[in-house]
Image (tube, rainbow, N blue to C red; front, side, top):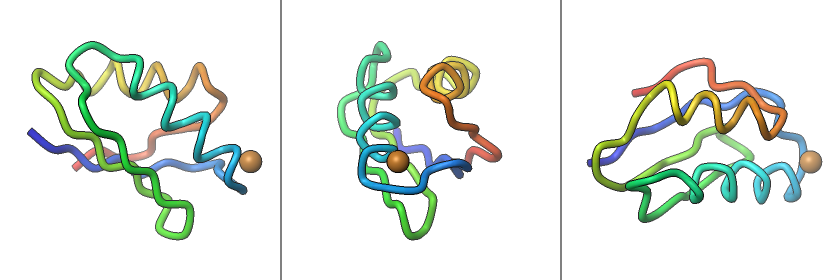
Length: 68
Ligand SMILES: [Cu+2]
């Protein structure tokens, strides 16, 4: 499955790295593609948990405002 997260608070490549790393550490996640310009994180994997992804991004210092 693939989910797209709208992420607020990213301002540079380092933010992208932090968000990418936070999401990659979650169970079931296989691919994470974060785009700074569109503020979107595309996550591929199995059994992706919305609240776990939100929490991981929040722990990294950013905010998930929507999940599609
Ligand atoms: Cu940054």
